[in-house]
Length: 587
Image (cartoon, rainbow, N blue to C red; front, side, top):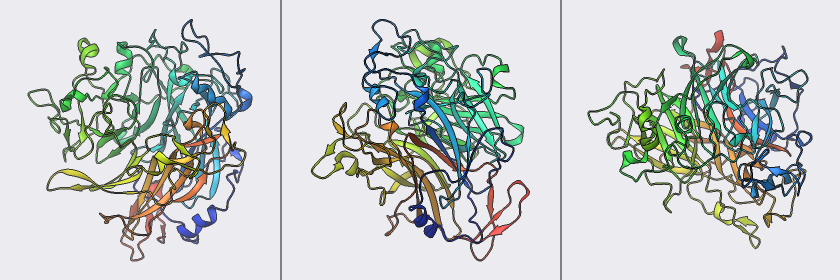
């Protein structure tokens, strides 16, 4: 997530004090839920914006022992539902239908940096009055854990995220085809556009449909609105069928570039074939080729110093690591100038791409999208995800400065449980899960892992949520109660006292049918920016825990947040965004 910092609020208690109070607060909303057309919505710069997926029991029609999954499945691809549509038992259907998911509404919560709730805004959806099929709307897939990441645009005027053009309560949409990219081997026969959304500081939405990510999901988006540009960079995955994959699946995965639409969804022309902006292949590192198009199963996304960075942390192909797009050209051998051997660092004169890759269509089935214009960030892992030595699962990334990069590690997702210790043992013993701090050595041109922040996350320790089941899930044979496994999306700010404050969304392990459906948390930590060894006393604090039938997904600062530091002796911030000029004390 790209941010330049936020301001503390004059007259409010210190952040640490407010967080302690927040622990006592209910997860219930403290004010009225706003509709997208509510003229009273205005996000205050410097606040946090949190995205939630909210499950609606009344929108789902599934009968255990009767309903065939996926909907409209063909012979040989059908499974009988083992649970009805009631949360959370409905996600036991993931045990029989590997594509299982239910589209759900998206709610954006404005929070003070200390976690105090300000207001909530519901993204237009079919469950709202007046939202018919030809009206702008968007949903997420519950329980797709990698969806609805939030990112400020490069000019900080809007926040971007991704979802689907589908009604609430639709089944298996996250593995559906897109209308113009149909894989006949996909067991999910339905088709839905993926949608990019932006929201401004007045709560106004703009939606853009795309045929990218057919068979899978779009995960993150950043609008490049600098210097009159109007393009969006996105990450995601594609494909849910057999091998070989159709050309549209191969070009529709990974990093994409899309021109933002200015018309309502119903009036937008057919978006046509996907438009990739970045491509990587493990053969760049001398490794044996994987399944074509699956090396770019990207999740995290940020832009820093005119460079796009992405992460991969799941799947059996490719490399779980941090990548960047090299826009400086190619050498005589056709390799990126910044990484002729697959790894490197961006050029100091790097520029952001404004157009898609001009790829060779004749090589798609054998080499994927070529030429390859992506590199592994030098110092980060280069071992194949097929090996047993994979111990890193990168998700969100945030640059504090040019020499300090924080990487959220989701954890390995292994839900081994010990009744004797009441602990998810694999989660509890991880050393890389949590918040990794990487520092750059200018002499060697290498990024090095300094330490991993875990204190306060209580990895592997089950917690309870009001209304959520306790005891054992009879389908999986393991406890319902979730435990933190690591971190997903993050955002942060640099403080004038030489520290950084980082907010993060947790991942979970549990005995539920799908761990992505677990109620998870928003946590925060403050770290000494200059430290290269783990400082004593730094610990995560819980800001908010998801309530029953909801999951937390993305975190960013509010639209309009664009804070510059000044030279004030007290170490505070000045707000120079959107014409403001007021200064505030430091935490």
